[in-house]
Image (cartoon, rainbow over all chains, first blue to last red; front, side, top):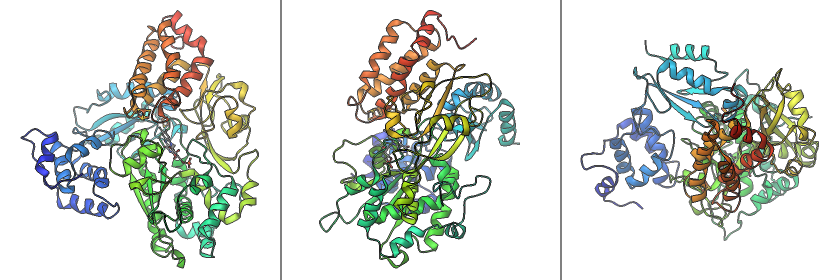
Length: 177
Length: 426
Ligand SMILES: Cc1cc2nc3c(=O)[nH]c(=O)nc-3n(C[C@H](O)[C@H](O)[C@H](O)COP(=O)(O)O)c2cc1C
Ligand code: SF4
Ligand code: FES
C-alpha cells in the first residue's frame, strides 16, 4: 500500500506546480490522536480530511497532498475517498454551509418552495456560494427529522418546520454584520 | 413494569440523563448481571431466546447473527462490534431519537453485545450530520470510562472494551454493512462481495458484527428484566417493542415506542392524529424509502414483520411516510429515484446507469413529456434493478417504491402522459 516515495504519490493527482502544504501543529496533534484509535494509517484518512477541513474551511489539493504525505498513504487513494463523501469540500465554501434536506418527507411538506425562497433571497442554487461569501447551499439526504419537515442545517445547527419567514430570520442571524 | 424500555428515559424537553440518573433508573444493571458471572455463551443464548430481530432494515435474528462469529482458541483473538448509526434512509428518524435522548442505553447495549461476541473493540459509526448525537454520545462515553464501565477489566470481570466514535461524512451507501466496513478502514465506501460474511471476516479481516442502533438498545432490557418480560412486550408474533414514526401530512407527525403487533390504524390515527383536515390517505411506505407502498385497505394489518411482508412490503425501519390525495404519487416516487440515483456508489452497471435513466424519465413525466415508451422502460427497470441483479441491496431497495408505485398509481402515471402535465399542479 504505502511506499516511502511520497513524491511519486503526489504526482498522481496534482499538476507539477501543486505542492503539499505543511500541516499545522494543531492539525497534526489532532491527527496523531486519531492514529491511536485505528490499527493503521489508511483508516485515519477521512478523519484527517475532516480535521483539516475544520481548520481550513475546505480541503485544497495542497492540503490533500499534505495529509497523504503525513500519513504516508497514496494521494490517489486519499483523493478517491475525499471525492466520495459529500461533506468533504474540495472547493472553498461560504462561512455557513446550509445542508438542505430534499428527501421524500421534506418534499411532501413543501421543501421545494422553501428552496426557491432561499434561492431568491440569497441568489444561490445548490452547489453555489452567495456573493457575500456568507452561505453555501448543498442538498443532503434525509436529515432524520422528518416529523418536523422541512428541515435544514446551518453549520452544526438544525432548523425545523421551515417557512419563508423562518428562512428570513435565519439569514439575518447568520449573515455577517 | 417497564413497557417502553427504549424510550423510558427520553424526554426531549431536557437533555439526556447523565450517568448517575441513568444508573438510578436501572441503568447498567445488565453489566452487573455480567459481572455477577453470566458467561458470553449464556448472554448469546438469552438474546437468541428473546427473539430479537435486527432493527436496521433486514430484520435478521440478532442472536443467530452473533452465533456465526467463530469462537474458541483457534478463532482470531481480535473481534469487532460495529454499531450502524448511519441513519440516512429517507423518512427514517428513529436512531437519532435514541442517541440524543438516551445515549447511555446505547453504550450499555454495546457492552453487552461486545461481551457476547468477545470483542474488545467497538466502533460506533455515526452519520456526520448528527452533530447533536455526537455531542451526547461523546459525553456519555466519557462518563462510562470514568465509572469503569468501559476500558480495562470492566467491573472486575476481566473483560476489556474500548468504544471509538467514528463520524462519517455523508453517502447513504455507508449504511450498507460491508460498505461501512470499507469506510471505517479509510477506503472508498463501496460494498464488498459476500461471502465471506463480516461475522467471519469483516473489519480488517477480523470477525465483525454490525448491528443497528435500535437493535443494540434492546439488549439492556433483555438482560435486566429477563426474556419472559421481553416476551410480554409484544402484541403480535414478533418480540419486543419498536420505534415507529409517521411523517407527511398527518396532524401530529412523530416517533413513538409501541409494542410490535400494534395495528397500523392505531399508529396513524391515535398517535399521528390522522390525516390533516381536508386530506385523505392515498398510500404509505411502511418502513422508509426502500419499502413497497401500502394502501388504505391495509390499515388493519399489524406492525409485524410477516404481516407486512404478506402484502409485498417490509416493516424495515418502521418509519412510515404518508402519501395524501393532494400530493402527486409520481412526484413522490420521482423524488425517491433522484435520491437513489444520487446515492448509487457506481460500482455495478444496472444501478450506476439504470437509476439515472429512471430519474431522467421521472423528470420527463414531471414536465409533461413522459410517454408510453417511458412508462415501459420504468416497468422494465423494476426487473433490471431487482434482487440478484446488483452487487448490493441499494438498487433493489429503489425498485420497492418504483414497482409498487407503478402498480398502485398506474392511473396517475397515465394522466401525466394523457394530460401532458402533472395533474396535481394546478
Ligand atoms: C443501501 C443500504 C443502506 C443501509 N443503511 C443502513 C443504516 O443507515 N442503518 C442501519 O442500521 N442499517 C442500514 N442498512 C442495513 C445494514 O446493511 C445492516 O443490515 C444492518 O445494519 C444490520 O443491523 P441489524 O441486524 O441490527 O438490523 C443499509 C442497507 C443498505 C443496502
Ligand atoms: S447496487 Fe448500486 S450502490 Fe450497490 S454496489 Fe451496485 S452500484 Fe453500488
Ligand atoms: S426527509 Fe427531510 S428530514 Fe427526513
